[in-house]
Every structure is written in C-alpha cells, then in structure tokens.
Image (cartoon, rainbow, N blue to C red; front, side, top):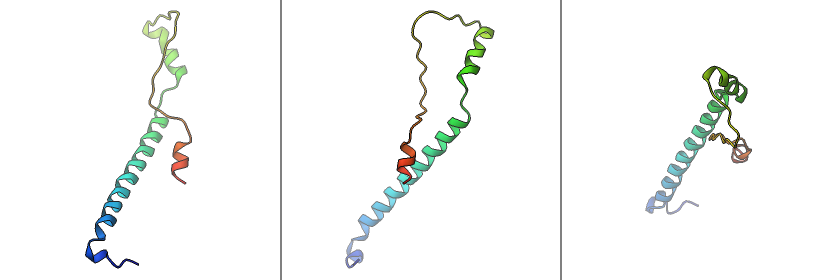
Amino acid sequence: MLFKVDQGGWVPLVIAAAFLLIMSVWHNGTLERYEFEMHSRVSMAWIIGLGPSLGLVRVPGVGLVYIELVESHIYSLISL
C-alpha cells in the first residue's frame, strides 16, 4: 500500500500532517477565544445602566453596535 514512501512519497504525507496540525491549532484557538469572549462579555442592560452616570444623552436616529462574536452553529458543524 505504501510502496513509494521511501522514494519520496513521504513528502505529501509530511505536508498533510503539517496542515492538519496548523488547522487543528487554529480551530481549537478559535473555540477558546469564542468561549472566553462569551464568558466575559458585558450585557447590554449594564451598558445602558451606565448611561445616566456617564452623562450620555440619547439622540434620535439609528445606532449600531459592532461586535465580532458570532453566535451560530458553525463550530458544532466543524466538530462533527
């Protein structure tokens, strides 16, 4: 089955193992970062509660709050 490993067939195997290592470290690091951000995120009620004490004035219009947290099932699909 692995007849040509000693003739240079080991190179693709080493490259594939390196990519597997990089992708698994990347995936696990992303999961840990996501779990940390979900654990340490601040609730919107707490931020709104700070408004009067900080002297913030509410004006009419649209306000957008940008966050990088993705709340989806992508991670559970990858883990399959």
